[in-house]
Length: 299
Image (cartoon, rainbow, N blue to C red; front, side, top):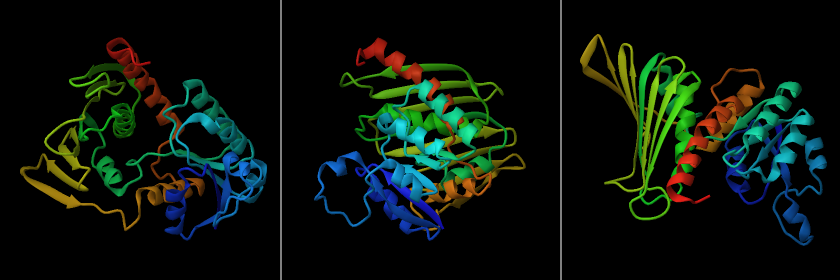
């Protein structure tokens, strides 16, 4: 049984529900400075009066806030030799991510960064079918979604995981048709191993969709993320595609991530979103922000 606490009340509910799906987790309670302001705050769970008290009761800590508000507490948790799940690091600075990496290696703990797709059975199967990708194409249409940069960051993390290599060159184009925020983002990633990745993200289209297509040495793999569907063409039978629908064993995306987090803690080599992957992602995303500053002057 893994004794687990949560920092941050705002986004805690989905994590509590995810832990309820997994009998291996024991939810110990929440620490949130805002809860301490109102001593009459009524909750259905334990509220710790200090972060140190939470750490003493737990083997792992989940940070439900996806920015660097609680960065000092993440560092403190790692120094306490606790395993850490951080829901997102898109607002962390590169130097902060590198500091977490150093602390993690010193403490020999697991640090998992939240990602909606990397831990899913669909992506795991897609990656297993793409041992040596030559070209990877990711196409997303999210109807009127204003936060294309966040979508781009998630997709870059996917490409880094599929390509199994670092990026040596990044090219970005950002377009806007209707406003002073991006309506379209195009990203090209050239990897050290020769793989080329292209990401196309649009706010407007005929319908919401998300496809990943990988051209390998002897096969082509196309994944329909929205419908959890994979089509594979092999060189020995190019006119006879194989298809499969992949489910997540009735687990939610967060439950899958928490299960992967636990397996990694136990010494398993389950694929997860690591600090190293997010550091490489952050370096690529800096080019997006640079392009946006030039095109839109929004920062």
